Image (cartoon, rainbow, N blue to C red; front, side):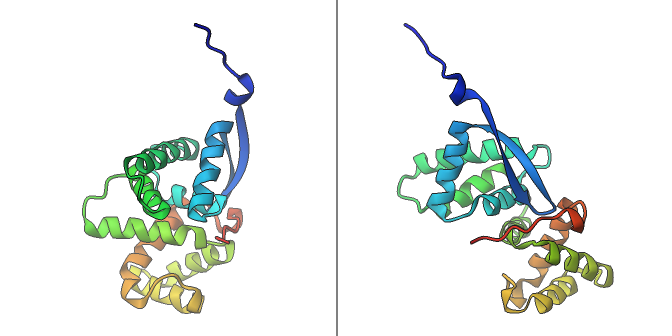
Length: 187
């Protein structure tokens, strides 16, 4: 028996991805990039928006590249386990699999809110939330002030201010500086 290895297929390929707080390079094999792009097509989630969601959910013990690899494996594992599941359901399962285990319902809800807000964190919004966090020390007033500034574009309702405020605080810890953030908007 002969095993042939295609070195071109196993070579690492770099792509620049924008996540809240920075632009970064991720190196994966072409087959993994193809699988990542297939997830993007199936879910309608642009590359940078998906990377932002992975960044918001990943266990901090993992680097972004390893988190992307793990996400791809978990996505396709979940898709195989439930072939009738909608792509967004599979995406949520994969994001949950790469996340640190939530210790309760509130922590899980904050994690989902962080996942929803991450792609929306443009440089302007990061700067705004940083500024607002200086004046608003509790999460509810921070979220209410941010929602007021974002207007109808805010992706949460007033009843979710507690979750949104904590998610915004969590995302600020991911962001190094507002100047280093690059815009990441879902199309």
